[in-house]
Image (tube, rainbow, N blue to C red; front, side):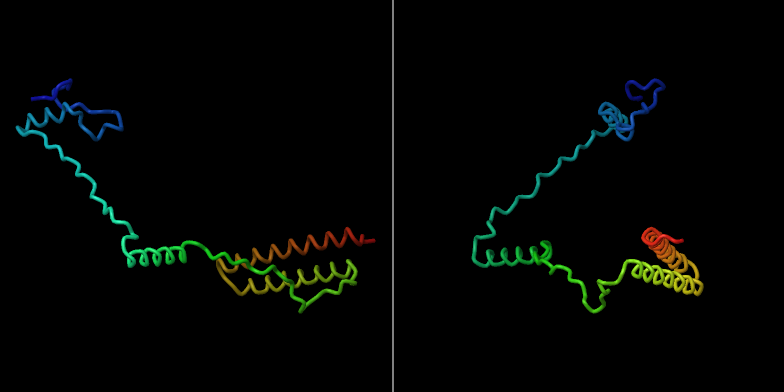
Length: 158
């Protein structure tokens, strides 16, 4: 016996993606009639009963609840400590009376030296470590170029 509505006597194919995997209710009945059995519908069970007991019913349960709250607070709530404000170290200081040109020349020479050291060290490495080191050398070189431009702006050449 073919399901009702089937043009060729077979099952109706659905092109709707939402219902493609399910058969229409009439098709289920028709399929059950073909097999000679009735369709079985599973009843969804009720959710389990909840325990109406309060966590504060006895002294022990209250202590246990408080201990659980403290443990959760310890792991889930970050401590409210404030870090002290940053203070610069006085171990190395630049003389405040040093002129701008001297400071810029020293910074330019330091950056140039760092760039050369990074290039020499990169020559000893291979692969991704070499590429990382060359990238750092390029950042240092860009800093050196910026300091040199500031130096040229402050003390024009010629």
